[in-house]
Image 1: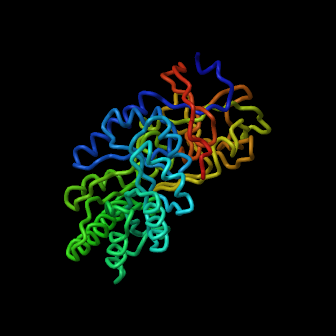
Image 2: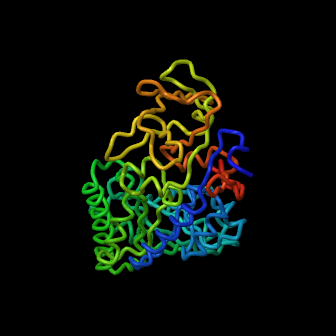
Image 3: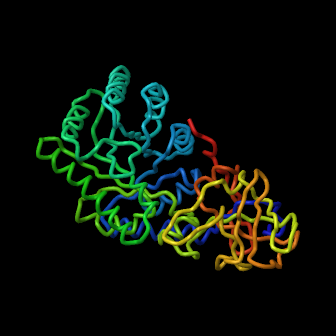
Length: 375
């Protein structure tokens, strides 16, 4: 099948770019002496996860238990959940532990105790990492707090739990205004984790793992991994990339594997056209980066090799994307365009399947098997 035969809107994934991204980041992790554990929330596909594992990844991360259940059912045997799972879900975790090696995070002593009680009742031991807040101020313990080591000690002493290490996510890197600022975010993350590890070690608490994860900071983090003893990298978005990663210097346009194929369905004015990919396809996420990123995605030029700076997706309705041109646009109803979305992770969760393409050929339809698994 060729692209011209597809109904629109359609989410496309360039096979060569996808595999190149997987291979390049695996090489980066190998050179850094760190294990690569990709976050599967970007692609939500056991097929893509298997490609990552085949090239050297040690396992995957999942955002929610529903995702983990899909990947475990597909035969993925090492799954980490860097998300604060409540002990009320102990039954599901115990069931998963029959099929895969499972690890979770904790950042609250009451929650850790709940997991300890649940695992002790089940006669099992659950691997846990302590989530550390390195500046994003979402989840995690304060590494500079006087009682941080006391928290680590308390968790390490709980029956039914095996403390594996410390884990962080430098999500505030998405707000960086320059590459230097992004590098500083990565450096501070590494310093905070390694500093807390050293304090715990001096207190007699062994810390085997330091796990970090974010695509924007990845290139900087990898260069610091040996210096600070970082053991694991957990990027997710790198398989597809998107407009935000482009604006943050993490990718070039040639690296971006996921695009949305859309059709012009209306031209109400010479400077305005309507595409058939609204918020149910592109999502309403804005992009961030070092350079201005107006609108809800970037319309690409005819061959997809550059962004058409003349066009801005200025508004989304559920099924409409309103595109404004500087001056007159030559696009007419029936024309097709490719759109680079602002946030590929959300886009892949909005569709049941993506089309794997090479040039103008569709070579395979990949189900987004973990789509909608938000619990």
